[in-house]
Length: 368
Image 1 (cartoon, helix red, strand yellow):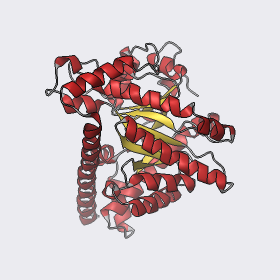
Image 2 (cartoon, helix red, strand yellow):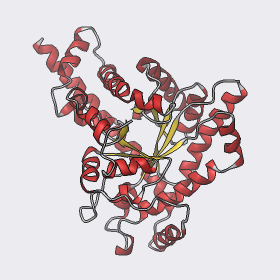
Image 3 (cartoon, helix red, strand yellow):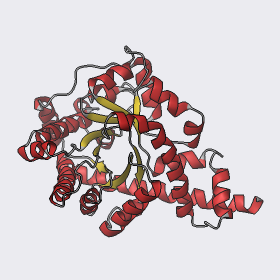
Image 4 (cartoon, rainbow, N blue to C red):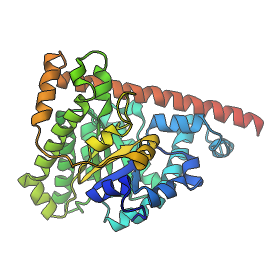
């Protein structure tokens, strides 16, 4: 699968059983051979994207100009339609690079992710329609459609899974939000089995970590600094393991289903005083995914340390959460706030992205 050195930090983490995914995509990354090198040398086995990533990729380079001009010349004037054309082309290329991983792992690993419009975060029907459309257009089995784990997103997740669409559930923060997403996935699989359909439909549940610590930074005692995110992660990891060990899931796995994997997202360090590989070391665990920013991946490859894997012992995590409660932070309320702010942040990035594409399209059309 990879040819990285057996002693390198990324290979050691990979060999522990955690998938390393890149939280970035640009056309230069694809066409310049960098992604291919990360796969070969750094044990990277997947990739995620979001509106912020594409906003930076398109606004800060001219790599997309030719494709934007061509789309406009062919009559595609909607900035949103132009963007999805660009994104699908990029992700098809990335999916093809990861296809050997997908095949070697029987569809467990080797995925890329494409997000539905963040404007649909609270619209079940339109989210499902967009998921079907984008997955069909991409025409790659190893492409996840990202759907937020909002109250309105959960029914769309269940329906997408029932329809055989792989889903990356995004914007999850708390154990309760994770369990709700896992239950939506489980219902979709159970319905497929009842309908005598193939139950092997992949999914990951993306839990955002560093935003917890950023949210309380400067508002909490120093004893909580950079500890809340990992503590919440431990609670979610225990919930994940408990779910997989449950009798219903044992039966589903025996019937051919594949577990929804837990994915750590937002694992770039936000606090300059903390190690740049802090969350990678803290969240090392088998049967999980860590999708990391490019600079974090390179830092970990250079000087990262792989310690003991996570366990289901949440004694220390409970102490941290108790301290947080004593400091005035209600975990469920803060999780709801973080999910809402995350959705709003993606909407802002989406608006900026569509504006950039629209301006580029108009400017390039004027010079063609």
